[in-house]
Image (cartoon, rainbow, N blue to C red):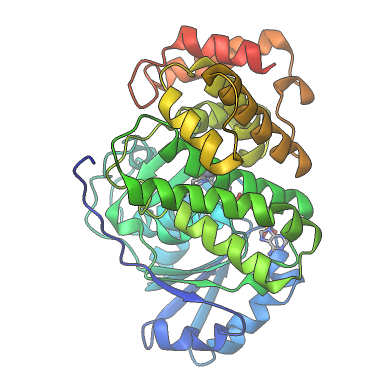
Length: 386
Ligand code: NZQ
Ligand code: ZN
């Protein structure tokens, strides 16, 4: 097992009908800014439940955070905080609202005049010392943002992954019933996103990290078990609760501790969202199968373990077992209604070279757990994914 630090201070409040406890976790007398997206929280009554729970607090609101949140939108919220001396933010929504709120929390304390400088540090800690504290009420299980210190901000033609230890929410409310109103498409996106978060921390090379491996396999098996059920029976509490907890645990640092990680699918997928505005989860599903095929020699041991322990594939040559496991993965995504080929979207083959150029200009030229997934390899992955 590799050396690691594990630190995660986010207080999780899990379960139904618990929003009334918000007032016990928001600091007393705080001026609270509620951040949200395109309006689903108003349409489905969540906003009212929250303002009722926060009676007595001075409330401000900032809506209109778009999926794949834009830097310029976040700056407006940061200015609102500065103008009104707001001292707590409550993010209510999916990963986009959470990620935007993280950026807003540091931008509101930023004294300089170049807000873009805050998104240019990759996954090194952003050099800031202060943030407005924030908590969240999650309405879409997918990204793990509710219990991690990452954020992804879009600006002009790029998506920027950023990190700060200040980005852990103080608390996150996970109420499965608040997710019942999700469109099927978003549920499918969330299942695929969660699945691939696990895969990118698991299908690398073995380091004898048995707890991490078995936990990763447990999450993958749970998703396979409940994926279609929760998609087709959105109000079945238990399957939705299991999905929601899987999504949080998939990317809160637990299964990634002490193991190699390969975020290539995410980095390539982000470029498809930036250029074609395709939902995050969908971009991953169209890249991963081809990437696993291309990298099957480097990932052989873990792919065979994945085949056996997640899909019960034990017969045939190594090559056959690996191919069968990749096909099972594709079929699972397809059963959720998520396509696994780039050509299933309105993308011309000639446009794939733009994705490669974008990766190059963003410095994504040596991806993977071994740092040798170079642009020529990416090009092959994309051609075979078409
Ligand atoms: O904006 P509203 O009106 O709220 O509608 C949203 C949005 O249109 C809707 N929605 C959310 N909860 C709902 C609901 N509709 C009905 N009922 C509900 N309960 O769903 C749509 C998509 O929301 P969004 O937040 O964009 O989705 P998701 O949670 O998948 O987040 C995607 C973003 O997270 C980033 C992605 O890159 C993308 O920008 N990621 C963040 C990560 C992190 N912070 O660790 C890791 C991920 O890999 C990912 O990169
Ligand atoms: Zn993701």
